[in-house]
Image (tube, rainbow, N blue to C red; front, top):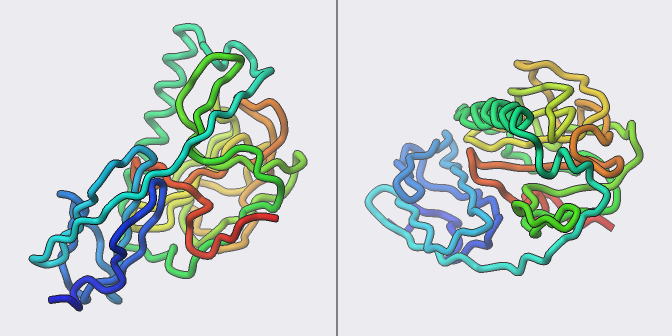
Length: 250
């Protein structure tokens, strides 16, 4: 039975994507959730920022309890943010809720495509100006932890697809995130690109790794031009810096 759970680590980091293999045809559950197993036995799952563990991975009839390695989450203070985007009035809050519901719906997609299988590349190259998971304080007001990675680049910098996938959401004017694109990589994995100044793709379009999908900008709640790159396993937000193929930026 040991071979039924190939390359499954004994522990996982908060915010990490885990790519593992089982025997082809095996049934795999993450906690109580069934997940796709590819023809080659590959399956994936994500570990949330606040996950305490253990994560229970059941392969066939064998349960594996994976310890979760905690991380430190520094505080980031962001000043000069438009006040209406920090504490929006009720009518705007209702709009934000509707927009976020549409994004959540797009993230629920569960295709059997293995577009993630060849690893990931940087969508842009630049200074990391905001890290995943750090507690955000906008204009002195504590808000939710940062859901992705900010990369400071000039407005108009081309944004490339980090891996193959299908566009599931593309809208130029969300209130908080401005120009927003979601790219589904299969098995519940998706990238999101926020604050875009230009969108070059449409919903339903298939794109390939390295293809330009838009341009970085400062739309929505942003104090300067940058790309926000977020990554999800369904509703679980993950750290793009921990994706396979991604090396720390210089």
